[in-house]
Image (cartoon, rainbow, N blue to C red; front, side):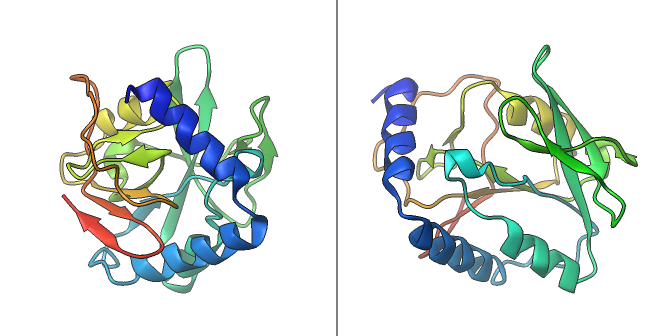
Length: 187
């Protein structure tokens, strides 16, 4: 299957998923994350859920990070150049949805990609080599290219790995892990 066919397939599968299953699977993914040896880091980048896209509810992960007193970083997207600016999430952070229903900070304390230790990555699907398919705009590939090579890249998926490997480009950045409700893949 091509990337566009896989995008269509997984968008459809998510669209059909009942809300209670989304919540159960989101909690299971958060619990699976507790197995990883990543909790000694300082800065954790987390995407905020686009509910309209039936994405993983990252509130559970946010609660884990808060409970461990970690610095959480969230992003604001620029759709003109497909870049992201990253901000520290604080009690005073004001969040609003952009035109694409992505919850984003209005402003705040800017954090450089080189400061981020762990990135939780939204995706539609992934393969057993750690390649991932997102929405196709390249936001995360551009962002991850700015991070340190040691930055831990963790995909979050409702679904298990695709059996077939899919096409990649030289700009695609592989995952270190992908966490599903049922297992942790390490690449």
